Image 1 (cartoon, rainbow, N blue to C red):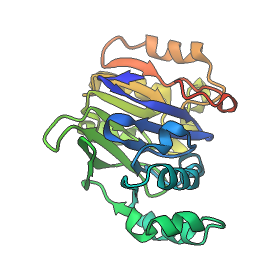
Image 2: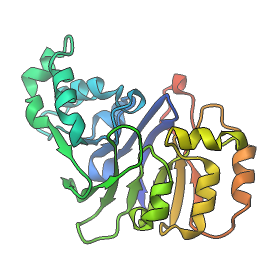
Image 3: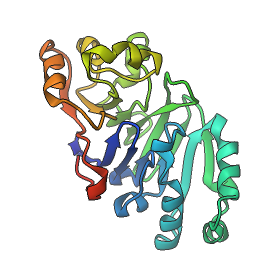
Length: 253
């Protein structure tokens, strides 16, 4: 997708794989799968360590350090997960080549809400997220003082943005919409995920210019999604990051 003049390439399917590449900043947000485009990104900003957001990390480390020598290799994770993730990658079988090429202790960086990370041609700021495991959102901007071009909420309950609407103040907010069906709103809240109806309620109060629903279910009923948002005509422009079948290898939304 072209979002606020920034190309975003990737996949986001609830419980299967989420990985976004933002080549403008040589950055990926999450690495639930790896591809040639994702492997070329120097920095990976993790929202959290659930498997559908990190399953492609080993492939990224291997491909990036081998095929993009001389470029930075950096993995930024919620601070509480830095040590266990470093231990896991230190003992990962047959990752010896990566461990010879880079120092994992230096590559893996912990972040907390409010921290900033320098990127190629920009900066990322870590945001809080409401999820059962240590989690972050990420705001990507051209400079520290510029309005974010993109905000990735990561997985989490939308109630946080009722309390702090400024967190999604950006040209584009890409948010978790794991649940769509009418009868699953309670399940969404119990699992601290987004539901289409919750975003529909919040939409008139949002500060972003465009809202992109991601992390959608693989069995999405597009008519049900349309019916939910027909109830609101105000708020940011709406788009959906459509769940393409992972078996095709396609990176198209």
